[in-house]
Length: 257
Image 1: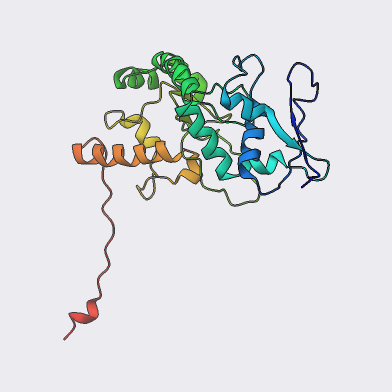
Image 2: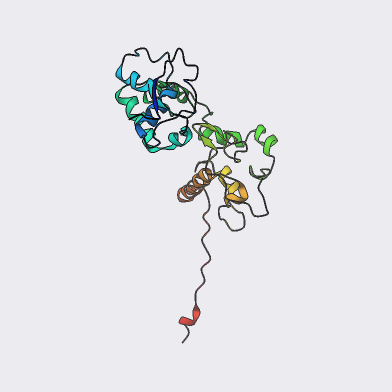
């Protein structure tokens, strides 16, 4: 029986359209042909050295028609395609070329891992101890920079509306400042929140109620706000800060005869 489909063997050297993205198949439901054709696009001719290999013959031998086209973008999003490429990259040790449509192989990830570890070993932010921070608060540089106001007084946030939103989770990631406008404590390395640094902790305590100011008012990130609360409680337990006892009210109707 004659078939409308013709089987041709694609020669990489002679066929200038071997890198085309529009490839046609005899059967749209032939998932194996779609998988092999998608793999063919990602391979370079320099990587395929043995054309007599059965896998190479299967890759370069295709059934071409003029009626149906396969969408490579749809194939890429398919889970079957991803499992096929992942299995071949591990078992057959296929070396895929760089492409934005494919994830890094396990071999490339292992090569890049030592380079990332070397960059994280070097300190990216100055580490200051508590005693240096205490001397900094009494220095002339601190008076010229902040004056008589708290360290958060001149800090302003940009947000829409009149109600300030919740501050960010943290300003420091991987040992360095990762935001354009860090909070008042993260932007100055010499401001260390510690139970011994009571002069700095007092700037974040309300002089009227004795409670810790909210982060929406001071602009501290959530990480520094959590550290502030813990250090204030520790300083109060150690006796460095005065602890305000809450005013308790009683119902005296229960004691009347």
